[in-house]
Length: 150
Image (cartoon, rainbow, N blue to C red; front, side):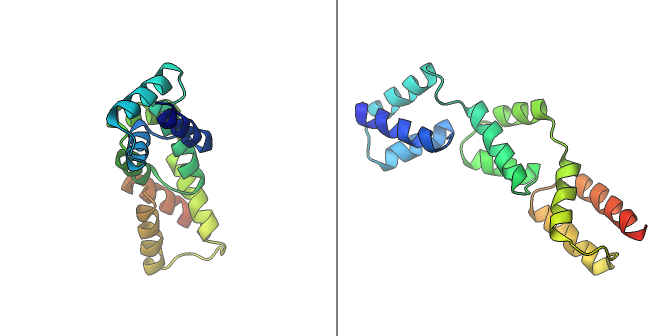
């Protein structure tokens, strides 16, 4: 078990991981199922790994990178985090997605010129690609256009 345990500690020393990620990485390193199970149980007992903490950390990082809730949730699910854990964490944090979407637009648009219809659609597609929901996109782009007219 010590090799799986040491590897788990090294992985967690770099960054938080979901339980599923740790399990996959240990499997890739050819540890036995028993070694993996023991190492992960020990991590849980010592509170070294927590999917809740991973969701919080991952979400903060992705928000700083300019991503919205849809994309973040998809990425967390792909990393094996339970949907219930994801939604509970996001509901506790209550991020201001409109504020974050506006920040993404400000970073992307240095000019203060009003948008043409084509440019508006381009900006909306960009925010959609970044993982913001349609309601937030509509709210933010309307506010942005009003601000540009002033």
